[in-house]
Image 1: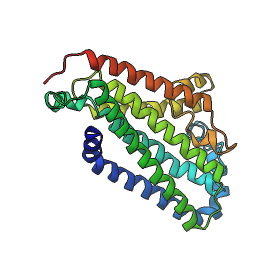
Image 2 (image 1 turned 60 degrees about the vertical axis):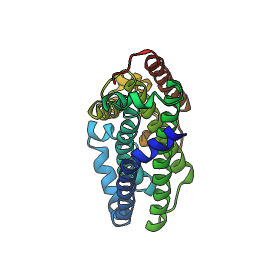
Image 3 (image 1 turned 135 degrees about the vertical axis):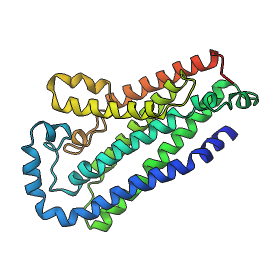
Image 4 (image 1 turned 180 degrees about the vertical axis):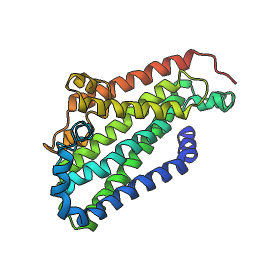
Length: 262
């Protein structure tokens, strides 16, 4: 429990700043929508004719004349990219920072096994990802109310739950990979998150790249795949989370057996 509390305290500033910025941007985007609603039909037609660019971001499949469609394109992009990067930072920094910061010799004198250290750290990262998503979801609901727009609850909640699953998967992947490293590298984990995002853009553009949906968690959390029909590919969600958990388990196995640099 002490490890859990320590991780929450150590990461609270990063968590609060990222949450405030991303939730605030989403709120501002929705405040703009009423002023743009009259032009939404023209915007939808323009975006639909942009070819590969509109396909990459799903703008050819989402109706921007609706508030939920506008939210999915504008606010959803910030939530996906920003949330994914935050999840990568939180997960990637949990294990390798102990060796890189030369605190491993203190941590492992505590009366807990390395397995419990990993579990407490993973729980702390999960709670922070959950906090981020709860705040963003709550702010999103408030933004719809403040803008005076009707809420399509099923689509809204499904989209945010898919985002939460995606952020959790990225966090678990980065935490598992960090167990193989001896020094913290935020650039690596942020780059990994962005790489997964761009793989989804490539999948949207190319019909021959549909297999990438089994590689990147951004596929099942894409607004263009969820909002039009109000459905989530639960098979991809489950398989993605299981694969991420397997990566973390492999990282834990290595972490329990390697000689830690003090």
